[in-house]
Length: 190
Image (cartoon, rainbow, N blue to C red; front, side):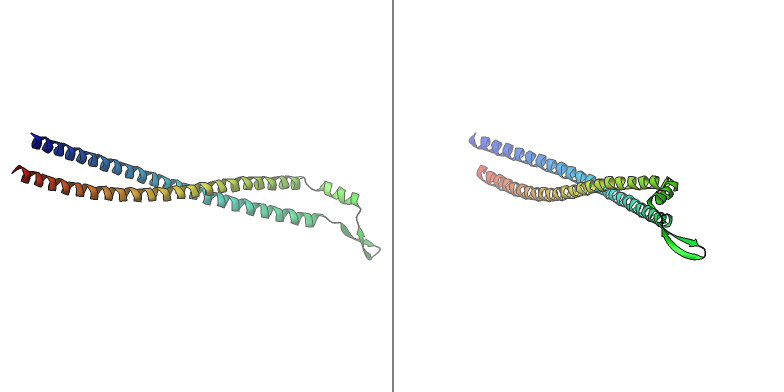
């Protein structure tokens, strides 16, 4: 009876151990798959952020070019439309005369009000530019966070695979120990 009880206890312990190892193996596989899915998701998110960053940089570049051309246009208009010195002729003699401030002011009042509108229009892209730079910085931060998370996930997957290999090795060792105990038990029974 003592031998049969021992035999039964060993058999139950081995069965329980085997079941626990199978369950642990399934759990590890599920966890590895979940981490792989997260890495895939973060890779897609990284690509989206990268595309967004590239688009924002392109828009930023376009706005900068637009501002430069508007500034050049305004400077050209200012240079061509601000005659503070004027050539005057007096009986065939050429003399340069300075216009008074009131004459200059009168001339500026005659200019189209479009210049002011262009200045306001030029200020709007600058504000948009600042917003885009903020968005770009935020995207860069998110991108670096995604990279860090991906690296962490990759390291965790490696550690899970190492743990799985260790468990498989332990399982193999337990199975060989089980065989040894069964053989020893058979020898004892004979």
